[in-house]
Length: 235
Image 1: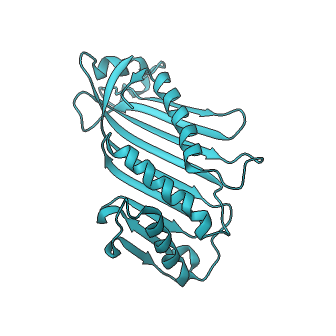
Image 2 (image 1 turned 30 degrees about the horizontal axis):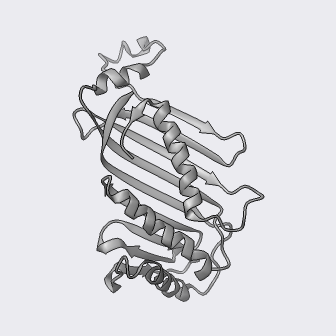
């Protein structure tokens, strides 16, 4: 096992709807703003400057957005999905991020009753520092290409940078994931791990699946990924 410590991470979560949000475009943003305010306050103050919207001639151009504390971290409602984007997260940020997503995710069906979630698309990108005495080059050496690279002889000398990448699909078709590991470009002795998970609602599932249920399923896949890559870090 290689022990690592989370340095920085980005998290993007997209929740496509089972059907488009069909309502008067001018009512989408105010309804979303009211929903966000009710879901987050008073634990997370919401200021007017953090709420914005966009309009257009097509329904697909319409959006409503909440910028957490006015920064780059956002929750955005489109006519066909709810989207979360969080950047430059440290370990202490993740419980807060999960709580914000849970509140908004679970509040949306009451505010926009005509839509339901079809699936959850989760993409995590994390730079990890390798803790001593671990060495990133020794760890990544297991992912060296097994085939011949002689075809590059007429190109020039090579320096290989091993990358491990896998794709898995659940036999019941309710989940799939892809994950990879490579050397971090920002850390001298670090690795970069990207993980993509898609959770689909089973045909016999309840009309609404709470966020915590989706988070638990994604966490189990993440823990299994960690074990497959022989990595260890504090949750």
